Image 1: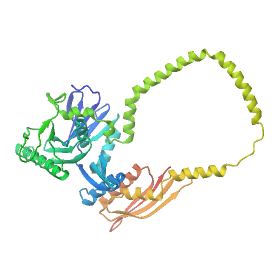
Image 2: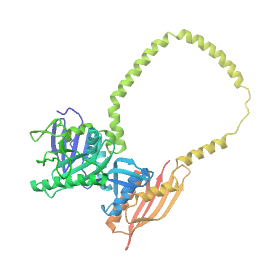
Image 3: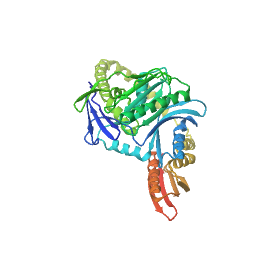
Length: 433
């Protein structure tokens, strides 16, 4: 049975489940849930894939986002969550990621902020990657999670991720599910050909609504063998007992794999460390108490030492009373302060990169002014246009402001006007150093 005090919320196929201890049930939302939570979601509007990007390693995420926007897969600003990255060459990197509309990601963040306790948020494919790492396979292995009419596929080993994709059938009939597993097998074969690998192990993970699956054996189509993970621990759902390895694997999730806001992660780790910090404080107090008794035995010796130091202090005081020539260090100190400020203040290039990176498709900046105030703040004034329909332009304008605020800018003033052919916007932002 599950004995963890932590609650798990699993959002899958537009249904939300709450797992508490060894009980799991369907809930309308997380409003009535209390306690620390691991929140796992398939984020229906998201896609998870692997790709190779020709770009500097630190800009891989940005280039993936730009590539997806240029391809037209999303008709609004998107965010990219990198689960795994590996450098292949000077400007070539492999990446395994989940991409979703930025608007959707911020909806999840707002849910997390509104929750009273701490929440660690995990995309579904972060869980599948955690399972793959737990298996520690030296050879390419496929992890397949089948639920409803979907099958999420992840192929990799203990050092690399080769392939990720979601397969979909029209419905959950026996015929369609057979076609779904055929698609899964076709994806595995395609990955084998593309990466010149051989997948000899396929690990299946099922859900409450999963049905019987075909048995895979050695045949002319390949060498894949379909296997199940260890049965896992018992959970009760609708008065029936289930052994689902997927739920057991949730215990192995690490908070570092989550994508919750930084504040949530800090609070979560602070709560986990609180007992250890309390023990450390008690140990320090005991040590101080013991030290008090020890020092009480040295008072007489300290008095002798004090007299000796007082004599030495008197001699030093006589030396200090001598007139020391004044040396003006103000110019040097001023130079040091200026150098320190120049290293911390964001450059004009950095500001322009932040602004351009936050723009949605169809928006452009016509005028930008960057001023460095005496109090150390950077003041940015910009004007721009959006040559797209009003509704899309206004959504892009709001997202543009939120992304800049997320990067540390404070919005002092903003204005959005619509014209006959396009829309115009104005913003005044400030960033303190």
